[in-house]
Image (cartoon, rainbow, N blue to C red; front, side, top):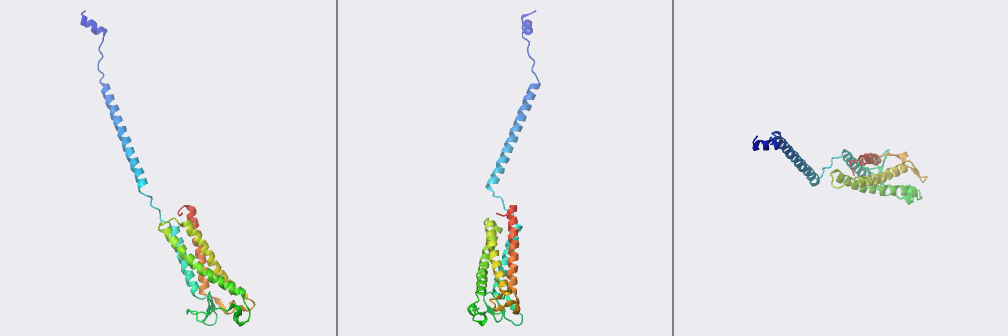
Length: 237
């Protein structure tokens, strides 16, 4: 036996494994694929975060705020109309009794101031009638100012110029109280036997002005209910 044969027997040579490079290639390709997927995922995530941070979310349009705005606008118009026309209308004749006094012609603008110190030329001072009349006058002005401010604030909330739903709700509630005082004072005058001198319900009927104030108050109450529900549902702030 020669020396080379002995060496080959002592140190057998390993045959190359054909499967090894294939496995290495498959591992490398899978690693590249996973790395590519990770890079794509990170790019998408960065794009999402960038769009979320860069572009503000659009606020959705609230139907409840729209209804609230419309109802307050109607109440505001009703109060203006109710203050300028007769609260009580004569059963026989063209005259009427407005918040500001007696009007010989209800369609006209001239009115006669009521002399409560000599009410109906009785020589008596009718304090109750004066208090009710002055209260209705003052709160009618408040209802118009409050109606205008509430409607303007509601428009700002409607078109997302500012988040003022809570402020508009508070203003609307205060305004509805003012409107309530107006028509309740006029009804008290109508049904009361004022100072034992005069009873309006005998010669007058309830006029369109008083009906408009009552309607305005009902509309405002519905508006308050709608906006409170919208705030509770999270559709307005």
